[in-house]
Image 1: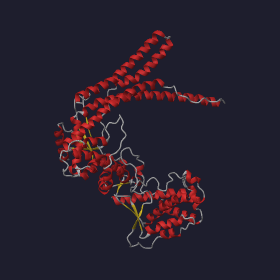
Image 2: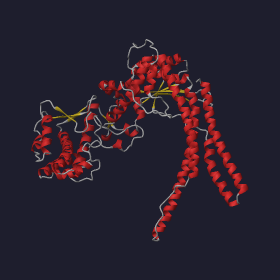
Image 3: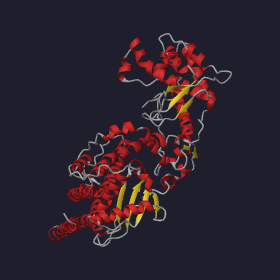
Image 4: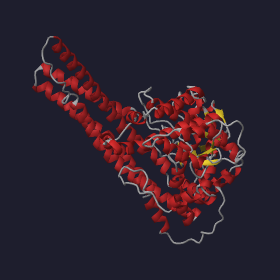
Length: 591
């Protein structure tokens, strides 16, 4: 379908919203006339009031013509003097597509590329064009893959998708606003009625009478009925416009294959979900690892560190590339499933461009490190920007040490009965899932309080050591299984008795004790967390301890506990050991 028929369809759908409003206003006017002619004055007055109240949201929805302004996405605008190669690439692709190049290019911090246009006259006239390119997307794509993505976005310009989107967006905004007005009024009426009934019930109880149950079933029913009418039209409107959006994506994919090549386009489509999943993992488990400890990676590495992860985990990512995501299909999807898009592109005839040279798309930037640092300044919160910066190895050690100490203290307080047991897992909330650790989100919208926590643990070194010593003394005193009763248990473990109960409790006791021991090693300076981009962080223990520690932990939680081997391992040495340290796996979850 060409631009003109699509524009006509969009205008008809938008006109349908106004026709629905006029029809409902006419129906309300007819009800007013009938009430005035055929009913007594007091009843007619009530009808007039109800009609006026119902008409107000309809009129507001019809005549609030302003649509949401252009969303100011965090990022850095780059001109041609700063990024000549990137601009030249974009201009060349736009020329091949046969459309006008964007007026602005914005580098952002997300895994995405998108185009927009400030169109005028309901999209009949074009306006300022903007292209957004995410640096994480560029990090994961080759230059040929990025060319395919850019050709796809220029295809949207060439097919007038960005101009016509203004009409569809206006209709969606009007429908949603009108539904929201009716739902808001219905909610307010229900709240008022509930408060009235609760007050009446309280008065009845005060007089010794039985209070009636609060029932607001029929309250606001007229508002909700009107909302359902607009919701039904809204669903029809969305299905019609979003089906057009899905067809536009297919058309843009074809433009990308024509300009960048079939194989490059298919590869880019396969790569984007992998990059997106890897980037989420990176943000949660590396970039924000130290936020709870008041730490961030060096400037530029909050975004730029993603390069290290991609390079180290290429085998895992290769496995993901072979499996396209299976997505539930909905008529309200704006994009078709990736698998369907890939299948359509790969069904095109071979164009012989499979052997194009592969270069990282970041090579299109004049200075990638500078771009990472500049974009980072726009995507992080002010509180996050004020955190202390450490190189990756120091960051991992410091952050994981704080997390280990906190987790150990939670278990110790629970085991000794000095805390209520909030967050009772021995692993705590910071272990992550196959990661060096899991940190707080330092991006826009994150809780500023979390980004201002101190590095040091609030209870200090002495408290942690005393907790471990007290727990070992309690075990020696025969209290191990009473300690186990304080720990959270499953229903099956709760029902168990005797040896079965001990077997349920033993792994949890061993894991919690391992956390306390790891924290003690770190306090003594005899262990160190080691960064790994390919797997979980590992705790390096003194030479030989990695082999002896498991047996010592087993002895401490045996049926006849013996803490002697564990105490011997924890005995501080008089001088630093000269032998090379050995690695022990993290006491928390591993990759």
